[in-house]
Image (cartoon, rainbow, N blue to C red):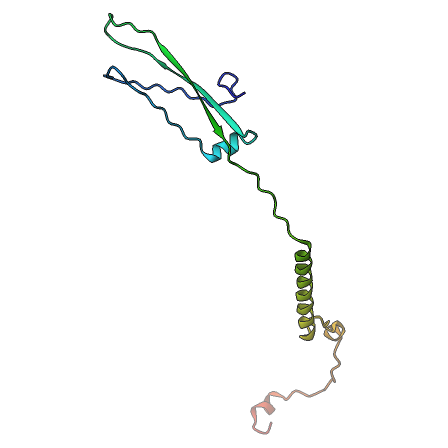
Length: 151
């Protein structure tokens, strides 16, 4: 049971002064329950009953007018139209076809990369092996030989 007394319901106090009211006055209170409020606060309930009351207090500065306070009780039922969505079932043949198509595509990509030489290893021995070079001895020209045209 959701009541204001046990604190499980959110309750509000409304006070509506009606100045210079005629002899007969109707007061209508309209409220709206949002779907998000219903989902968040009352998810476990199919129906929520809202009980309330309205009390008429007469406040006047004329001492000869005396009227008892009048209280009217009301109740409103709010039904949930929420339905739980069941997870969509995927048929087994569709899963098998999707897996087969994925494996086929993966195989084609690997074949294409293999044909392009992507998987060939670089010859590390050739990269790091010392190269032989033939040593040559040349004599350096002297300063005078360099300055002459004969050189």
